[in-house]
Image (cartoon, rainbow, N blue to C red; front, side, top):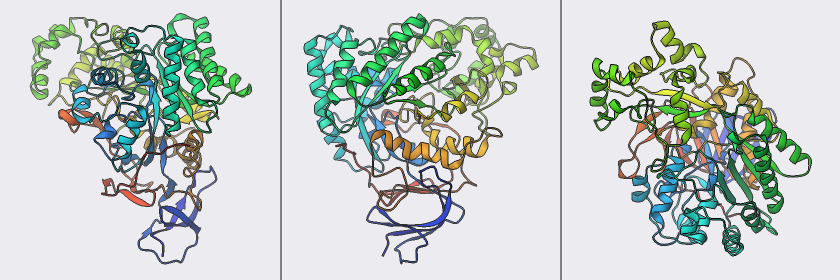
Length: 582
């Protein structure tokens, strides 16, 4: 007898082939039959009209702390994800010397906008080495499967201590010790190694991340830890010295290639259309294509939509946070603050001021924020009120710039009224990257590239500014269902979310629906599918707040044959575990 029989569903099997109508049989956590099935089953699901897909694989999450207190990986579980990869961008919590917890929290709080108080209260620090961290995570049952990468910053801090925080160059002995620890973690089953080299990544004290300027010798020396292993990937984020000119870009990309050569493993890098630097993504594409032609396994992690922020009076950022007269009322509860802002005299005073500098020493706010605030009138053409009919590809006609022109006032005036209205709960959608032309045409081209990987959700991070864990759902609602032009075939999107990412990681037991594979499965109602409106909730440890976005339309999600969510409600099943690569 089957454990579960999914009847008459539209199977989108993850291979890229056209959908087909079939039954799917599950037994012992595996798919045992696909086709017309007449065998008895403990549970029968009528999937008529539903898409039946493999569970989604999210390559780019930051659940490194949350995994210790949240067994369900919210909000990813609401968006069809069954496997997550942590330890991205070079930040994480292991290895860790006793007493270094605060430095690691400051790093994660600054780089990934996760409240430090929540991390301090939520994490039980019962490890020192990376394998001990893996053992600690493995000891608790979870809803979803997860893989871990070894992050560069904690590794450097563990070996070099204060010298890492002072950004000193690693000695040959330092590199040897870091390489040995990385190798130990990889042999324990870690899936890879990550490093971050972005000017926008700062600690909560405004300092560069410890490995941001790591040398060629250090990075290639660490990459050699992969030699002789049958598994492993490298993840990297870099600005490629964006503002320093073409020569600096080429030198930085030479380093990318050197790391890939030294490791002998697949390397994925962040691929964005930046602002400033709108043409840089084309240079990245060109260099990747040339490297692949030479035999290097490079890939580009690509977002599903604009990469930006949600602004609001209670969010991490909003346009008035640096204005002196706003700071006078910033301490008030939200509704009282909104009422105070509606005072005409205060409004006039604030609108007559200039924002004070927010970035710098002692501040986790990246320099980009000051650059953007200095040209707020110009960029208001890319700032939009977040409304009930959630639209992640709004036209300039919906922007605050156009609304201001229609009213004969400044954009800042209109933004002010939007944020201060009612109880102060109004939100602004501001796509900073991937939206330079006022649409998602560039993203569409990126998604078409054969070396593109669906990634960059940052699930679990930037909790006060975004909820891009919904990228997986958006890939379906927008690129399959919602776009009038250049839509994508359903089977192509599902292949990107499943098999392509699983293959990149070296996961051979998931990513497609076929006999013998793990029963990681989604049943999706395309008529009801939506990403859901972002809601700012206080459900983190220590009362920390985050944006939470719950999708609709996922009828059920199975992990290893057990339903972990049903109609948006998380079940008690905890079949997920740490996936150790070998």
